[in-house]
Length: 157
Image (cartoon, rainbow, N blue to C red; front, side, top):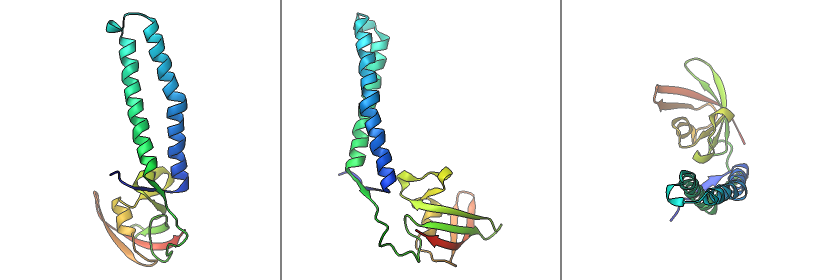
């Protein structure tokens, strides 16, 4: 049985777009490469043919994996989540207690994490440490760099 993954509507759309790209653009391109290599003659010593067939195998594996992920994807519904505590899809403003620096993160499923976009996984050390906390709580989080303390400043959806 495959693992169920939770996505935002945007995250699931992104996966579907990627699958569409693989099927409609990359698959025909590799087929064309195979056709060109076949036209060149003797397949037993044709490196282009071997490379194209290997690329085709890798692409088909990617497509299969992505189809499986999409088939087991569920969209998260944040409409009935309590916003007084930190949960997945919460926008959380935290303050580092030791240096006073404030930062805002959105907690997302592991597969949608993107640090540049300030989306952190609920599976990450910081994400795990923030879950279930309320405004004013101090979260003590053990990171690879040591233990850090963060104060929850604000929680929004």
